[in-house]
Image (tube, rainbow, N blue to C red):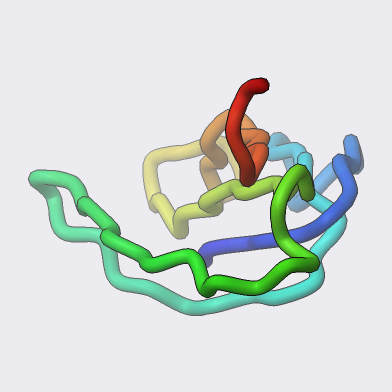
Length: 82
């Protein structure tokens, strides 16, 4: 499960995972054993520069405590340095 949001969060999720993103969008994705690379194009929208986005992946994993594992949250800053 790919979680995308505009705010960070720190909340228990399941028995042992932590949700680190306040969800604005959730997308179910399949992650193969060798990993996954995602390419995305950022739209040319004047509202986007210097906006912050937070992303996290939560995985159904039978060997994890509670059956769920989670990546560390990632903060994305859209824009450029002056």
